[in-house]
Length: 261
Image 1 (tube, helix red, strand yellow):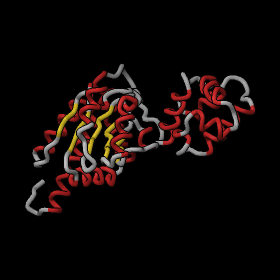
Image 2 (tube, one colour):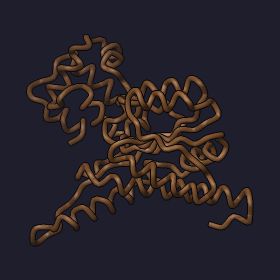
Image 3 (cartoon, one colour):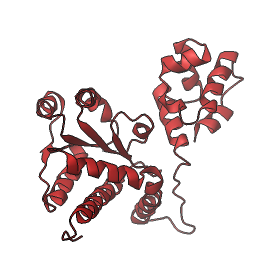
Image 4 (cartoon, one colour):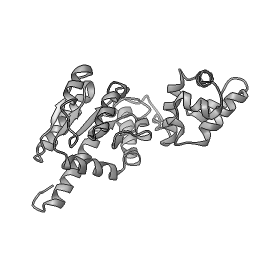
């Protein structure tokens, strides 16, 4: 739907406080998704609870849902799946079109310079750690096998919670950690991210959460878009893994002409 459309469809007239909130959000397209409810309230000179009620008035479950909408708006138009004319479209064709549309948009969201920078850091690291769990687990395993063929060893971490903390406690300042994150998994590792960054460890995110690219803490964020289907993102993230692998091959070849790609 988009924030502007939600705003235009708001029930009744907006209050003066709500108008100030709207002006703040519309006035900073890139920065708006980064505002916490407290920060937005301060900028609009309203109470924090007014921000939450404003989001709900527009039809969002809460302010977090509004922020995610703002992040999507700031990254470009929503990817639409248009039904082909004629008979009912097959599930296969629907998914294929969704994947194609997302793949065509990936380069707009993931700069090649970010991929190359992350892989340069990987080549310069003492040790490589790949952290993922659940559905993202196979992505880490796949990338580990790809870089192993290039002679780059890595440690894959599939644990969560306390066990993940124990594993990450062995990571050093000259190491690199690649997190493969799906959906809302960022909240479960955000505390570990802070510790790693404070000690000087290089952190890379490979994720389907575009908002992380707008408020990067990690040195490298490779955040892919999603289609309107809201699933099937595994294919796009696997594409990023291929792109990272190819970047490694190119950089190794540049350093040693005998390395073939």
